Image 1 (cartoon, rainbow, N blue to C red):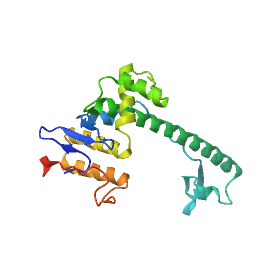
Image 2: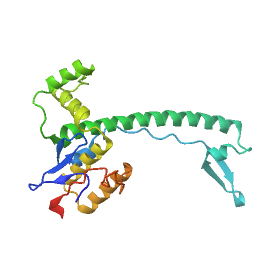
Image 3: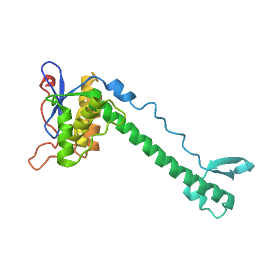
Length: 219
């Protein structure tokens, strides 16, 4: 039984999103894990070091910390090096955050274009895009993608996978469709629910806040 997806009699894994769309999850977990592997974080800057002298005169190099740099014995040279290090760390954290965002966008794109097959998908997404532009002023940018892929990605993003819970459902469904063993599935689902703050937390009607459809094949 799963709170995030259901398994049909023919073995297809279906995640139903908050907006009511049924998404058939594809067995592509191995590929999902490789998405963005060409985006590599730069090495983290290393803090300046200081020397301590131990028993018997032995010396040891240690990395400075916020506490050690505040020591009155710290030299002006060390404090300048620490200030430069803090600037480097700030730039590194900003850069790695941008790379994390890029990887997240690629994972979302992969899940939409390769991870699911949406049931009841409109035949004419161009008409949908025109309607979005007419009614709301939305522009569907191709962002270097083939036009049909850009339309499908925009439709799934705007209409289907709309919430963090939707993303968790689809990801769990992909893992299930890919044949992960039950222990790994249970651990992944618990992690998803915990990250969403929904583990064991009922809504006002006493029901789980995520889909509670029963996976009858596992009962």
